[in-house]
Image (cartoon, rainbow, N blue to C red; front, side, top):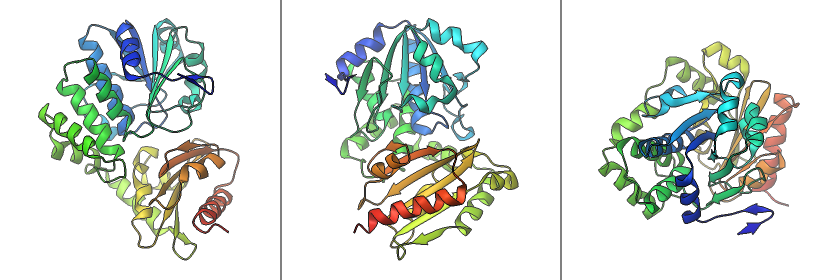
Length: 335
């Protein structure tokens, strides 16, 4: 189906394209999260077992709290001299968990130039034109849920390695099974993954309960500076480059902290601004009364109805903080 000049395909065609390829490069967005890395590791395990040549090449390395995943050791941080020829020679380039080519930063040019087919497998809204095929399900809980469906549709054997990646992706993107897309089917899929050998206690602890002391110190600084607006209906958090330096942390250590902005009575929407590498990442979350995807779009980003983000350049941190707070207040208090 062609829509807005994008070629959307169904699960059978997506599976056929994946299984027909012999040299596959998997990639995902900058600062990859559990859904991104978990989906990559699941596909890597499935297709290497099928005898295919598979490489995971990302613009950023896997975060430390996800290195326990079987397959994460195969995640390669992009180096042009090492990887340009591999990407150019792949017969299939798979973009997982993103639908805007800007999200691979320095890999954009080589990805676009690749002569192999380009396939997007994703669950975010408003895909942008850069690939040949789009298997996009915005109603899915996660990209990992979509990958599970792809493997199931082809009757691929679900190995422990694939199951671990899929469980990680689903569990992290559903907020440990508490977000709005946590459907009965999501729990049934999770049950299948546990039956494949995944230990939910150990997996959760490795992702969320094994941080260095600096991350806890960073969290304290962020929460100490939280701002409330619109009679407490909006909260805004911020982390600056200087805070990373003081605590010896990195942008990886900010993962999931934005959700704490919603853990305040009366807050309907929140945002976390993270300054790093000359950019400011803005993460938006909503309890459900407003659609933050539209707000993120106004800042050049996108995402989901209740969880979205944007990357902003050329604006002072304090100024952007005011603009974000104003945008959220306008949404919760429409005139």
